[in-house]
Image (cartoon, rainbow, N blue to C red; front, side, top):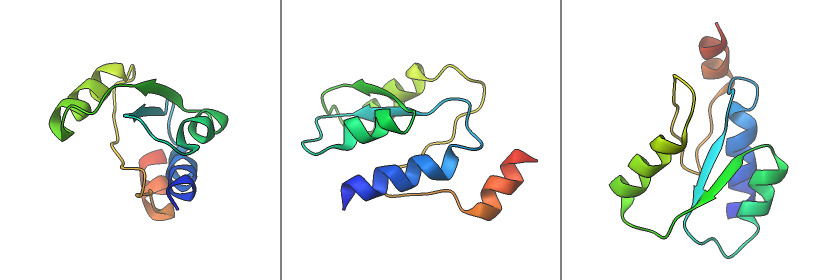
Length: 85
């Protein structure tokens, strides 16, 4: 299930994002490979708590605007269109 989630999340932002960053904390499935295959920059860091992971992930981003999604979330088509405008 998780594998499908990461693909869906990445695809939902691929048309509107200049950069897709995935911070992995030790997935044991194909999440890392799938994220890379779908154009994401993938980084690893041992789990250090939600806030610490989030802040570290923000430091990895190089663009001016950042949209944060968990692997099981996706951007709706309406939101994609709104962001693109």
